[in-house]
Length: 309
Image 1 (cartoon, rainbow, N blue to C red):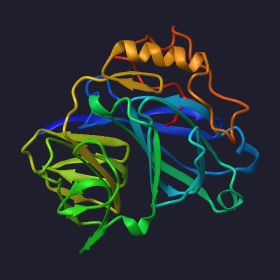
Image 2: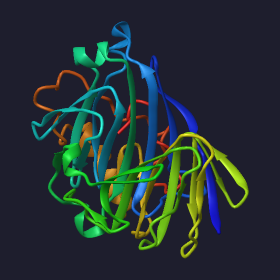
Image 3: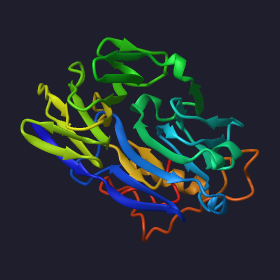
């Protein structure tokens, strides 16, 4: 059966840049290891808004961020010294582990001239044994990601395994993450090999069991249920899920299985023990006040607007 329907909530990360925030949700904190999901855009990249749209250096612990673009370009810089221009169709997987800081800036002239920015960003919680792993960043090109096509169906495996597809994207726990495009009238399903499964409707409209669902909704299904998804118009889905990891606490950009680790991360950021990107270290996002983000609560809402990923 359908477990829950999550309605995306509107949030602003700066002038001209609104996002639809899907996870975490108060009645459904995670789907498999996925603990956060934002859908940004589509938004025309205006030269006069270029600087104000930037996401300044900010920290993470205990998770991996996954950036996936439909359109536009973003420059990623992190405290490992990585500088990576993120393009549509690539997978950009940053493992924060024990602590990393990164920025996302909209500075490439091709992006400013080329139209609309649209991206999906997710956070994947790490298993307890990997929460203090060394930070890492990997960029995977579209040709490294398997694609499946059938009548009315186009599908790219972003990470994990599903429908018999696998790729080389390094993950830390069993999961699946797919970009699926359906023509009107096409039928699709969910992979059956994972305990927790759902999909986010990025575009379009679908019908399941006589009920209609629209863009901006996430549907999560009970284990063992195999829904038939009928596209009522051209539709884009992001399928995700995997095996649950247990309770996680989330505060601002920090995720951990331990409340005290969140407190340590707060102090580390305040005291400068999480390094800034070496080529982007002149400004950063300060730690939010405790009044806006109660520490160590698993019921804390989404991160503040500055921290898209």
